[in-house]
Length: 633
Image 1 (cartoon, rainbow, N blue to C red):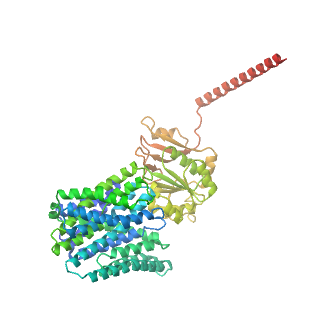
Image 2: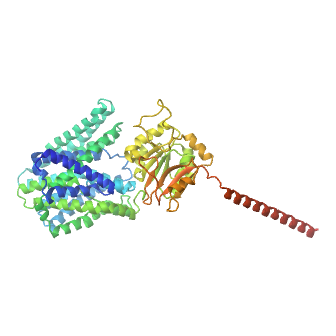
Image 3: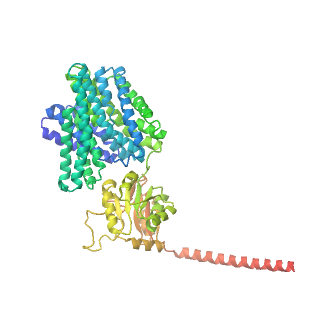
């Protein structure tokens, strides 16, 4: 494809389409991106981005990877790592070098690669790409601790693996006489100085600039973007690919700087990262040559088997001895290690360079890396969920509901859902109200839902829906606005009279969807519960459909949601929710059902029968008392 602009447009469209299709099918997006890249590139020859982009190919890939790693660093808050800090440190410091050493040995003795290629490949495969881990974690919904370990390891290991590869490559050049050892040592020291202290300094400077109001809101994201690109380039001038470490340190520094606008910045960077990841993976895969793929032989199968089933599990097992993890967590972390964009990008850079300077099997390093990336994406992507379920490391096996505000209404609602085995949690900062929910045997989180503590201690992956039901409509709207980007704007609901008047109603961009139509206030719902209104669960069948359900319920009854046979929840207030179908279980809120005439007759007859039985019992007791008195006399 000769038109470069059309090629970029096609790559972007195919990348986003793959992301959307993966979301619909609930599969890892990287699987589809890998397939699209193979079809666009080596399988059809439709495009060859490395040749088409020319000299821009390497710097563009390096810059895009740096932005991806910076965005990953923005998600790493030290409060989150308190329970897993020891495990993460050991996996990075101990497991990383072990993986490097054992992978290099496997590449040389099993893959038959030369020592320079094998050592650099071992360093490259230390990484466990965040671009793959993040989507997998979103789908798998792991418990907090194993999810935190995998996320921290992926983001911290990526720049370290690239740095290991750089040092290996530079050492090879020193041994062959192309570089001097003094220059290598000096460059490594300078790169570390620029990367770590420099990354911290720039991160703190940007945090100070943003928090003190020295930059307007509309310029914060562009300034951040420019700083990331600049620091990556500056560090790369000292040592190739060392800029990845700089931007990661920058991201972690800013994530822990308590910047008020960090959420907005993180969302912007996440959007950019999604676009870059989608395009990058297609570009890198499409650049793979068919003859390189054909160079793969039976040896690669043995190499993959050793790396997947021996190297990674053994390294993690050794590193986590005494780290406070149970055997299930160690088994899961030891198995899950998908490689991603950084591995492919770094392998492409050094593989091509090795081939250019005369290392005959340099290109084979690219093929081996792609083989491992493809294998880990497929095997780990499709096994993470089932393995986590088997080991009981999933936070929830079905979608749950988070209630904010404990009241008679929310407690009764939560109990009804709990009876249907739907995960529920009530969050409230009032101890007495939270105690009432706890006495009702409903899981409770005591504290301010908008606090930083809640952000780090509440595992929101358990909940696909949220209901804000406090006695303050404005607070409900604030909660829904804050949680909507994470849970989904169409899945956050609130109570209250949201359309009282033009002067009092809120902007349509603020708050969640109204749980009731027309809206009901906190006081109204409290009074309805006092008056005997209850929640009912009704399963629809072929004989008892939705129309029959409506006919048999009082007109005031509200259908709030229904549970599909697939265990998914559909709230009636959602746009385009439709109507319940056969097999669905309706959760409704309404007054007691009126008694039919036949029910009244049965009830009256039962009451009369009970009265006669009570009268006979009393007569018998009186007679017995008289007999006893006569006998005693």
